[in-house]
Image 1 (cartoon, rainbow, N blue to C red):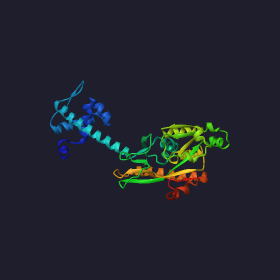
Image 2: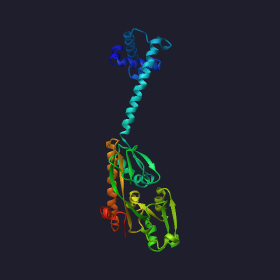
Image 3: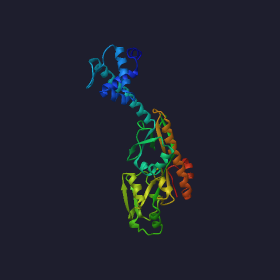
Image 4: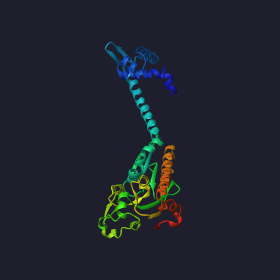
Length: 324
């Protein structure tokens, strides 16, 4: 760079020459650089005097590059492309500082995050979310994402934020529950909405008066559809609290019974320690954790008969047990 300073009178002269060579005239170059055409001509003239060669042939019909001018323009063009690429990379990285990639289930995204997304944008307007959506069970590494919701155990090479123990409970619409309680749904019409190969077994969480043998069931491989079917009043579904908490808070879904199951598995946000903890990642992690805490408290106040908070606090002695 020190040699370049000796070879050219100023960087402005190079900018003026590149613009005039690319635009084909001093007038268009002047408009691009927000100066006058004589100013462009003077800067290029000083550059030519400094180099001792003519770079641009001034003609009444337009300007053309000399051989020396063509050589210089080719070198400047390559250099400017490199500078432009570097600036775009800086902009991309600056944008990435505002982006957080989540590895979560489609059901969590659809039924938990999207209903409160306007609040997320209001609380963290400077952050953009990107998603790695998992249609099936949550699992797999989190090395290529900023945060992943997982139930698995992780070692010291991962940072883990516990959200809540895994809680299952039967859910349905208020109208469907009322019809069940009043006996207005014949046993043969009672419906169970299940997740294919759901584990653990949850069939003892609700009393269907034998409906598991005489009623009918709907089974879906995508939990997003399980919850949607419950919202449409098609029957009683298995409710993962980490997904359906919003619908319980707003009353679109209600517990179908006072039974719940705490599996002992932790629902948690996990990140690889190999990735730096950027402020945006920490903000998203803390926001989700606070939303979960707030909604569990709200559900506990609305349905005290579930003893949700007490059950969670007493998880160590009740893991995997079913409470009536």
